[in-house]
Image 1 (cartoon, rainbow, N blue to C red):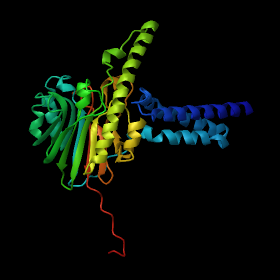
Image 2: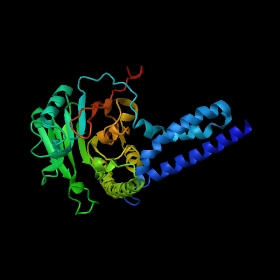
Image 3: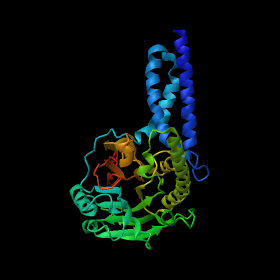
Length: 356
């Protein structure tokens, strides 16, 4: 029994150390240390062994469960950012439904744009933020909306904000820290100030740099040499794209800071909610998925098909905007699935008896 307790003690200490190292590493800015944010993929997974060894330690050595408590606490938020457990709340009459969707230029499925228009109508989407839009291939989705904004203006390949509510200002955004040679990653963002029923809200729609890893890159034979070669190839792509996303992140934070209105930030971030950008965003915005996420997991079909149901599409909003639900709708019109969020005005504080 003493030997068992000794082994458990050192396993828990080592597990906590690895958790801390992975967490700290994921917080390093990827523009200075390319690949660091990829640790955010592994970090929330540490909650599983911590829970397992917590139960085991509770059984054999209950006085030594503190490292597991710390480990579970450290990994809880990034784990909740992937795991939907809530139920949709009753929404007010003036609620607004937002969807963010990487549509892959409507190439994935025949008549994807027509089917998407039907989905928009059925769901009652009020504001649709799309990435990888091929103009004018978005027809007839635009028929469901009265106001449109695209970025960049000079390209047929863009991000788009489609709204049923008036857009009073719109502007393509430039990732100023990204090299001029990076064409689409330089201008794959835009904003629109939209007059919602209760306030004017600035919608920022971004498509952060793609990983560059194609579906076929993940399909290899069991040959050891090929696995190693393909692994190195994928690692180089991931590190390079991670560096560009780190540069883009700096601009995203500046845009939010400069906004004269409450912000809704939507887009394909090509990374999980975690790491340097996500932590810094949580100081300014709220992530509805943490406590109000519902439904099924996984917003990227190729990874979900390989039993990695992770969310790389985000919608966050300013404090004060109330959210009632956020879920991923698994419709097969792209290699992504749309992330749908229902928001409303700030809840009015109940007056105290003295004030009444």
